[in-house]
Image (cartoon, rainbow, N blue to C red; front, side, top):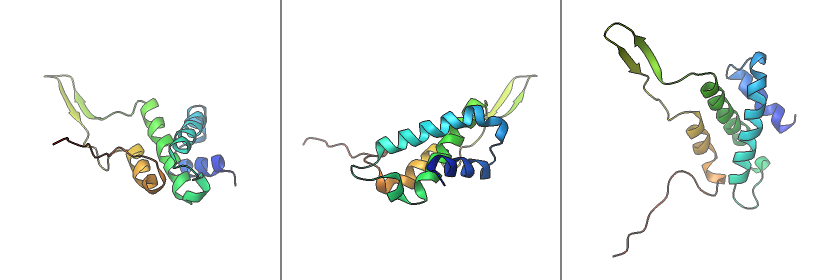
Length: 117
C-alpha cells in the first residue's frame, strides 16, 4: 500500500467520509510534506514505521476539523449571551502527531534557551 493510501485509510478509521475527500486529500499531502521536511537528516518516513502515517493522519484530521468549522465552542446561548469553550484534551491532533514523531524530528515545540550569566 502506498503511503498516501495508508494515511487515507487511517483517516477513514478516524471518521473521515468519502464526501470529505475534496478537503482531505490535499490535507493529507500537506501533512505528509510538512512532516517529511521536519525529519532528521537521513531519516525517511519508512524509518519511522507506523508512527509516520499515523502522525500524518492526525494532522490531516486536525486540518479537516478546522476546515469543517469544528471550533472550540461547546455551547452557545442567545438570551443573556453565554458562550462556553470546550476543554482541550491531549493538546489537539497536530500536537499528538508531533509527540508521536518526536524521536525522528529535527526539532519539536520544546527548546532550552540559554541565559548568559
